[in-house]
Length: 271
Image (cartoon, rainbow, N blue to C red; front, side):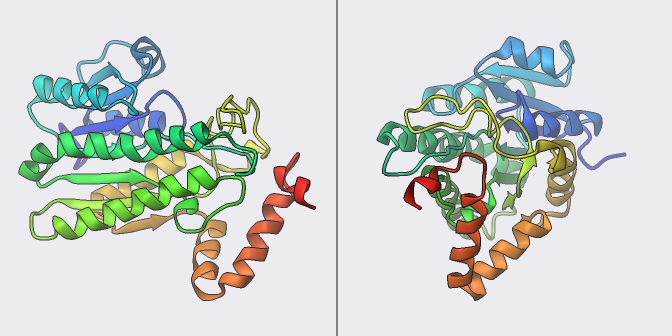
């Protein structure tokens, strides 16, 4: 029997990509799963409709009241929360000089504040259960990426917040962790914000060559089970993190060249 059987796992942003794959994996392992998204009916359709172990709640994580309501609905239904996975997030692809400030704010509101809100309201139950709080971060949380200033800022903020919280809760039995996927096949690049805040609408990468969301979810679930401290995924991601620590100047040039060579790279306007 899975160690997640009958555990209550709360996942933000469950309508696609890693969030959807996490919800499906957790349900297969017998967990009771609560997911939120801006369209509850879409969530139910995507995750298989009626299921006594699935709870779909309409919530915009950038709104504190929605996050509070989401957590309250979960507690009203199941009485406790064992695992909170802060997964909801969006990205961007634009030069900071050209990006509207509202783009940066939106990313911080969703990627950072959404995590803070949900964690705040779920923490009393998680502390009682000696459960797990997890943030789905990114390599961009370890190494700033060009044309992703708001995204990198939000993920750096996530990791700093979670590290502080981990230390606060060190003697409580609560486990706090974050995971840093590399490039994962998902919808995040299609909905990434452009300079004016509109969705990019297409991905600059060959998604077929990337790690699948399902494989990523399996790594995350195993990491939760083993109470890992942090997880950095993909060889490219691990190389970037370590190179940035040991040889930051080399990392600057390596990262610059990588993103300069993207199709229609905004960086080309500076060349």
